[in-house]
Length: 338
Image 1 (cartoon, rainbow, N blue to C red):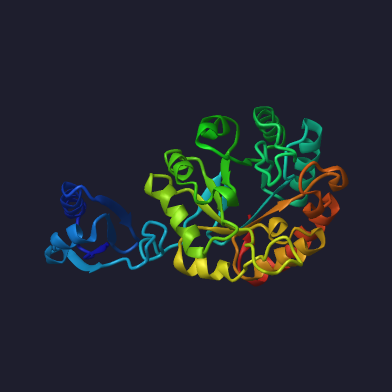
Image 2: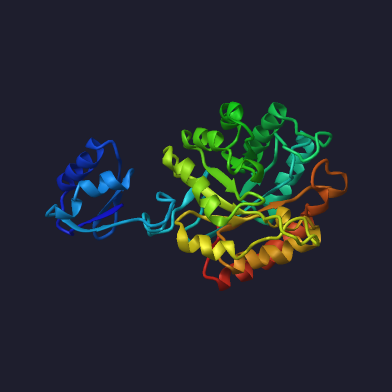
């Protein structure tokens, strides 16, 4: 429920209404706007209705939020949210690049990748320390040693870092070494993990599941925000369909739809979305054109010897060319490179 207060409503009026909401064991939200204050109330709709908040003299209008996701809905929060990873903004008219290898393999490998992507204009470094793979015989990541390498390279290059967290038990250790959590497609509906991440204030990049509807993605984000962490960035990374010409089907329809329904920033992963190096650049440009707030792209100093996803990783010179091409698209859609 959204409660729009009259322009003359005071802070005392807002506090009085929030206290009334809280007295019924519901969750009040304070959402100050430019012209007036908006309050939110989350909980049992029958209890909310029994409060008859529309009768309060300082309430202008009471509106029901129809979407099943409340806190991430644009009905609740009309303006775009801006989420920061370190000092790097996502959303709010900025277009932000995250780049780096799929997996942390060694200090030298990650440092080389970091220097290359930073020189080309990337603002954040990605690198997986924990690698959930389809095959138990594939490279599973360096785990804590990988986190330490990621941390050291971040210190030396100044790039904030993003890395995947795969289970609740790893949240604290990942938080020690990385600037942002990534929730992979396989864990999008790991609700215990989402709740644990919601109790941290570190940013979370939430990837869409391989067979998830967009609504499922938004409801997964709701789990994190409902626990108190509003620093969520949504990521479209392709879904499994009957088509087999690419690794996944990159659903760019989802970007404008999510931007319409939610205030959270949205980025796109064209590396996993296609699984083919030669298709990453055209789909990255398309993502920028359809309104994405940024990209997360796999770049390896030598993809031919990569231990994970080498076939979809860009060479450094290809990433530099992509960044040059992106500038024109980003300008056309009215954003600016972060």
